[in-house]
Amino acid sequence: MREFSLPALYEVPTDGNLTDLIRRNATQHPDVAVMGRKVGNTWTDVTATQFLAEVRAAAKGLIAAGVQPGDRVALMSRTRYEWIQLDFAIWSAGGVTVPVYETSSPEQVRWILGDSGAVAVVVESDAHIEALESVRAELPALKQVWQIERGAIDELTAAGAEVSDALVDERSAIAKADDPATIVYTSGTTGRPKGCVLTHRAFFAECGNLVERLRPLFRTGHSSVLLFLPAAHVFGRMVAIAPAMAPIKLGCAPDIKNLTDELAGFRPTLILGVPRVFEKVYNSARAKAQAEGKGKIFDKAADTAIAYSRALDAPGGVPFLLKLKHRVFDKLVFSKLRAVLGGRGEYAISGGAPLGERLGHFYRGIGFTVLEGYGLTETCAATTFNPWDRPKIGTVGQPLPGSVVRIADDGEVLVHGEHVFSGYWNNEAATAEALSNGWFHTGDIGTLDEDGYLAITGRKKEILVTAGGKNVAPAVIEDRIRAHALVAECMVVGDGRPFVGALITIDEEFLARWAADHGKPAGSTAASLCEDPDLLAEVQRAVDEGNTAVSKAESVRKFRILGSQFTEEAGHITPSLKLKRNVVAKDFAGEIEAIYGG
Image 1 (tube, rainbow, N blue to C red):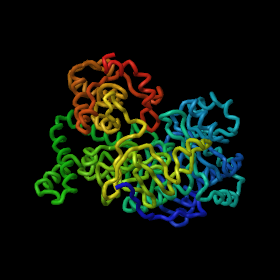
Image 2: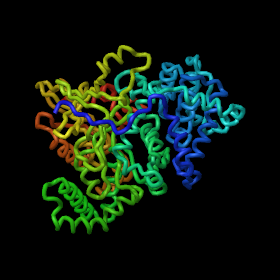
Image 3: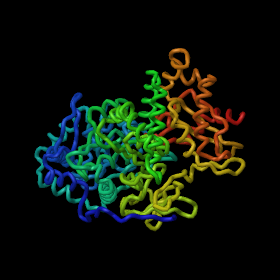
Image 4: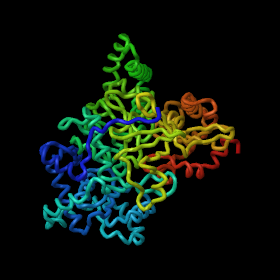
């Protein structure tokens, strides 16, 4: 199939904007908890009425500080309650939000604030102030700076005490559906980040249709979602706005290192994450079982879960004996895994990278279905996703209702719909290259099956061509290799080379456990073990598993274990964990040459 579409389930209001959501919620659901706020170690509910009042108070402060309709206001912070409050406050003041990753370098801060022309910025920490001050002289448009950890909300509330409700109402109503809501800068895997202009219409179309298609997952007064992704990323932003659309309760967790504790405390019914989160949960559970001498039981349980999930799609259904085994393991293993994920959820939505078919079947088999989706900053997050009632594991689902997905002659995925961005800020040339006759050219290669489910097979610009002329899509094998507990990152190489190779980094958390189990010296590191025969053999098993997903000509023949990690600080990965292949290739040129005998 070359093209597929679904009818819209939600009609975008032509004369409204996203601030309508919080006013509607306060009117129609005044006592419903729309936010969860962590105070100390305790989660407290914030009602729709209370949230609106807190948003309006911050908006008054922005207006008093001189923020005008259409002005860009930047937000640089970890994911926290104040991020969501300020986002809606900026819109309520008539402004346009410009998110900045809290891990951004001073140069990235300078570029994003300078390119967007931001007149004000709210940062979180002293480190952010330090980064900002180092480039402040190069930002002539920037007039106001507030810091969350030094009382930004109280400061804004006090400053806006004399601003009338009527003025906030007037400002809130200025933006229409086709006006910019935000400028979200791309991760910058190739060159400078580009500012994607996303309108209020784009978010209405995205979140409205997503919520309606997944309505059983968005039950007002019952459902809840914990946001632990960066709110600065478009996926995290969608996770923040969709709950207001429903409305359901949203909680924010700033530190993913404590994710299992946060899940246990907040107990969400729905999780939205990236594959690495679900891989970590699986690998941690397996490693714990092995440490307790229950590794074989866990592996049998995992095989049962996968077989059970596959049988759900088979014509004859689940055989009786498999049902019995599944019931036994549900009490012994699966219920404990669901408890790790909060204990209340049955579904998750995953995006950002492929989850992998085996892991998808595993999670559905334990009673926690991960609905895989696909999208980009330019498509306001998900442009396809698996429906809750008809998921196809191994695909990224059907198009967002009201949109169209087309496969071009060269295999590129094209997208059309109200959720597509309106262009790149201050960059007409890039806009013209990406948008043609209303179609966004994603740069991804994919296929549509007979039911309109999309499968992504690679990136146009990341296709490697070996010396033998074989085209290789790195993502397929990289994702499979990275699923191994010991592998942190994998980058396939081989452009213009006689065969395909790979650079592999080791997950430090699992290396410590593996080293202890295999009699390696305490404190062993990837650098000290990169030539260790046992570690090489274990990684070879991961590579062999990855090679099963591709043809012999595309398979990894040789690999190198690196003694260090790919880090955001070194410029190897983006804040959304995408590899900057050109930077990695440059920094590890010697290791690549060693693969080919150089």
